[in-house]
View (tube, rainbow, N blue to C red):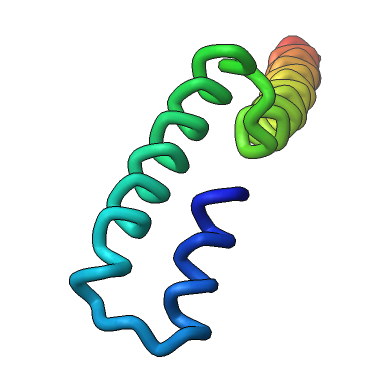
Length: 83
């Protein structure tokens, strides 16, 4: 946050880019490092992982229901053939 404040201060004072460049580069490096740190610390906290897990569970339950229906239909057909 301090680095972003420093870059903003340079911008507000209408400094040239060569004066702001070190602050911008260092800010980007710190933000990148923060992202990497968060990914390492919380690897399974991704929302998309949670959503995909729920969707996979729903798909599996639907597939099981379809298999049960197919089995039931096959049993009915074999009974009709016997009669």
